[in-house]
Image 1 (tube, protein in one colour):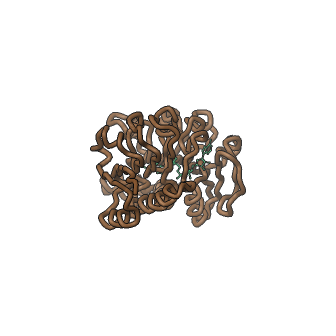
Image 2 (image 1 turned 90 degrees about the vertical axis):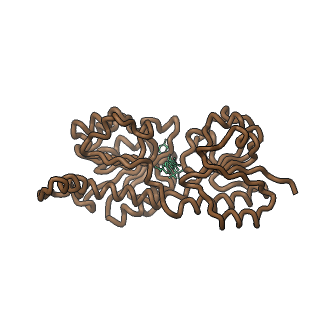
Length: 321
Ligand SMILES: NC(=O)C1=CN([C@@H]2O[C@H](COP(=O)(O)OP(=O)(O)OC[C@H]3O[C@@H](n4cnc5c(N)ncnc54)[C@H](O)[C@@H]3O)[C@@H](O)[C@H]2O)C=CC1
Ligand SMILES: O=C(O)C(=O)COP(=O)(O)O
């Protein structure tokens, strides 16, 4: 049996335990496994691997002369969709779409409720032992949420928003049939009509050349005064300078940011200082089950790879996600 050099780059979303490694060895004895932390790999590790599961630095893929398949534990693969990165061509690129939707949708709902019910203000007031009451901005069930990017995360969010009786508008790259949990579905062409209706906007789109600054200064100005913007996709989906200005002027009432243009957000960045901003450190996707989910996705894909069948979550280099 020919062995297949496989490299696991372990990290927060992919960290197989002993039981999982034993399953892999029992089911696929041809896999010659090297497992190393994503922070500690060497050029030799990359050079030898036919399969990599993890997030190697994109520029290191030039060293990957034996690579046939890269499975990422992330859903976003913006850094890997440039075909000129690869020493070997063509390679199969698969992502972990489908393992993040539920926990990130919960995180966004948490941010929306924290903003609407003034929880951040009350938390600040606690430090001064201050007893002062505020009305919520508007009842959630009288409000509208616009979801930009109706993929796995966007759909999970829409389902949860419907449970709170929000009206849900959504846009995606191409128009398809409207799911029952969305009230109106459109594409980027509909943003000008949708934005003025949105009390809340959630950025859940893939980061591509088309979605860079999808929410720019002009589109931000179309939002109603006091709207709340939540970004869990990638920092470059929104013009961050325009966002800061709109937050400072009060045109945007608040923002929940799990992602920023530069990560970690620099120590001296103004976003750290704005009272109406909640920053989480690219943490919305963390869940106890996701390292296991990515491993089981890899096992399913490995069986397909060995049978030369189409892989799950194959990334399309032309649409870039
Ligand atoms: N904060 C975090 O920890 C995480 C962030 N992400 C980010 O969220 C993104 C979405 O994740 P999933 O829902 O799992 O991916 P997905 O592949 O299911 O969804 C991507 C969505 O982007 C939309 N899109 C692409 N181009 C568009 C355009 N021009 N206009 C409007 N919509 C467009 C697509 O229509 C699709 O609905 C990822 O690409 C990643 O960047 C994903 C997982 C974790
Ligand atoms: O899946 C994604 O795209 C993510 O953003 C997940 O977070 P990560 O960058 O893998 O820590």
